Image 1 (cartoon, one colour):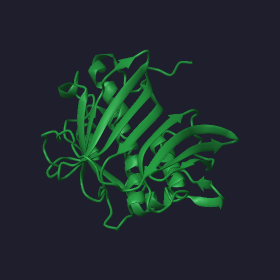
Image 2 (cartoon, rainbow, N blue to C red; image 1 turned 120 degrees about the horizontal axis):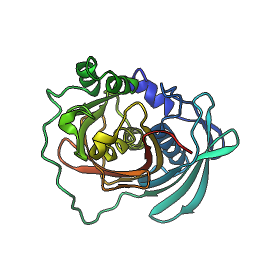
Image 3 (cartoon, rainbow, N blue to C red; image 1 turned 90 degrees about the horizontal axis):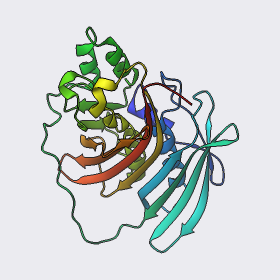
Length: 288
């Protein structure tokens, strides 16, 4: 991904007919469709079928099959409910006639109500921190395999600045918390719907790896296999993704070859804008 405009184009779908859309793919170095892309494109499809005064507040999706980067994805949107305050949609992402991802999402009118939140973690701000790619360059000579993994995710649309040192570094071993500043590298004015879609895309970065950190001594980075199983996301407050967001990530549990990631996304003012949960397959090597 070379730029933010290219990412926005990727997540803007072609309408084929009523509630049927086509999405193109970002060709990843690992030759599988990036989960965040399918997640974000599914939300983009759903947004095109709801009234303009409705905004997503929650989405729950399941990854069913590995996506082929060489085949466009068809998104079919089903109307579940159009209520007075809430609107519900179900989205199915299809390749080669088979579902690869399914998602339910709920949209709501803007309404007044009670307001409270968890406090933002007290961590260093993004200024002066190295990007993930710069951290990779620092360790390239003595940790080439880890650096290669970091370079594989390099793209020009988003910038990530981890607060902690590079993943799998000895200083980080055993910890299960991670904090990453992230933002869209664009000054373009975006709609609320676009902000939600872009944040959904970015939320799939870093989340599952947190469940591996406590098991540092058992991990061979070249054999590690990770695959998303599901992804849930709640949107609490308006946001501006062209400014820095803090992704605070934890891993509540890992068991039975599955790891769980729990994330909270705060803006620079300390407002909690989103909560994310994801479970994925975590193995040292791919076994059936």
